[in-house]
Length: 296
Image (cartoon, rainbow, N blue to C red; front, side, top):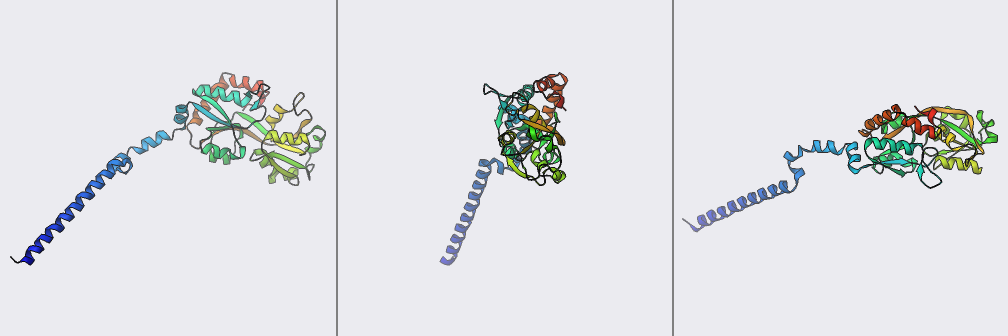
């Protein structure tokens, strides 16, 4: 055999060994990859839907951490600090009673009302329980409980202006305030009520308490707020004894508690509310804050 043929055979064997070696190395790499990365293994992936379903249970999430973080703002008679600087109010006592039924601790957290839905979706809070008006837009964005209280929007002003401000056009050129992102703000800017507010100078404020303070201080002529806040905050002996509710109301509405969209907590809370209504507990709490007649 010639030297050329020997060299060709030898070279062919070397190439074959190299190819076999490369294939073996690739097999080792692929095996190691699927062993080290579980999600890359198609067999293990099949178990993920069950794990995902469990992780998406809001009720399981809340029960596991042992508390319900309740987003609130400060306004009487719903959520406020008493003379001992203790958080109290109708919503506070109501929230505690519902949490007892759920077997978790309530954790009240002050929020900015205009960021409420962001706080909820980010899980900084578990619900918005703060005189939330039930609207179609909110029902589309969140899961909302059964209505528990009736409400309406009213004008608050100095007592001497109450009679005049009940007439359309009386607020023309006047400064009107309402809580930012509230239903009161919607009313003050609505075309439906333009005869009352269309020519007024509207200013958004942080919350309903600030709205009342602006009217009391004279920096605003009127505020559009919740009726339940009005009856809980005004009157003899209060900080706003010189203010009055105008005898003209707007937009009958109802309050509900908002949870994350699709949350399974809503149904459990509805059960708790029904039980508290049936045994008289909710009425007892509402009467304490002069809200018994407002219950839904």
